[in-house]
Image (cartoon, rainbow, N blue to C red; front, top):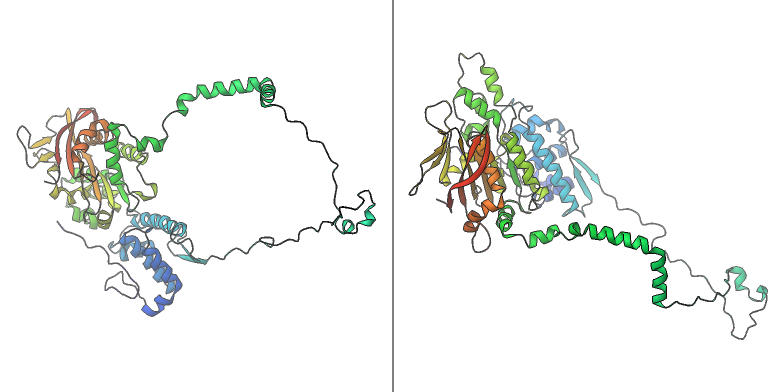
Length: 487
């Protein structure tokens, strides 16, 4: 399997010998406050460890500093930063737009947290990719702020003076006139029980109504608050909370990747599987052998269409509502826009089979259960059990049209610094069976408890889930096989 090298990281004073190289003079960049700011953002926790976001930011800032903004285009960024081929179609491949949205969000996070004291601000205005710099000026203090106003000079009255004298005998009162209030006798304070009785007689009906409303809403008011529910979850949910807490964290992105259903249609029509290497570089859309087929152009276009299933979308929508999700770290990315670097530095949820989501191919060599999809051949498709135990089958597949199977796997990412959750099936019903099972805490609890390790984390696990296939809908998913730990 071909492993693609990601674009090199750009640092100040180093000009890498690649097509992403910066045309930069090290001394000038070191003195330019715009470049210094870009370097601080690139090294911040807000940008994370994404090498592609760093390359993107430093590329556009470098071109801006050198007044070469004509090179800050979607096409040029796609070629020089993301390694796309010359002349690629940006309408079919929106990776630059996707990363630009993420970069804008991360820059905003930086200035809201680590960079809130920065006097220089960087923005990437919407509708383009050319950075904009502005100086933040401190607001002048209000003229009256901290102003020591003179205190009025009150007249000094001799204790022996006649207070009935006219005002002329007190010159200070002419310079600082005062309004003297007549002395009023304070009302007597009623005993508390008398005062309470008076209030009760006056507002008794209103109080009774309020008490009735409070009692009526008592059931809702006494429900556990969300933070109490998370602190003291029921046993059936505690294990699932542990799983999602591993997938979502504050220190790294979690990429949710739905299936590429346009790719499935294309493979079924050409009867040729797409390896991960061809999927990454886009050659699967140009190297397909379709000689003599008048519909070849339309078939190839299917590889560029962005389709996914309703089952995948429903699953993503459900995940987004989980309490464990870190919204600013959750990134929904179409399979075609994912990069190898994302699976090195982040967590991921890959949805579908190897036919619908080729990225799963990267993790199958370290798994016991493998997808085996064979469209257009006599070999049945299914989920392979590479090391069957007593009473287990070698293949759980599509021989029975009334039965379907799905796979759930929790494995390390490509650098073993994060986690990848694979959830998919042999067909739409199989994926529905796997997602339903995963989102049902009572069904997941036994496996998750067995996978739990001493410090509270989880070791790798794999599960085959089976369900009845009723009109392409899964019914009553149940666990068929499981493996705890790497094979």
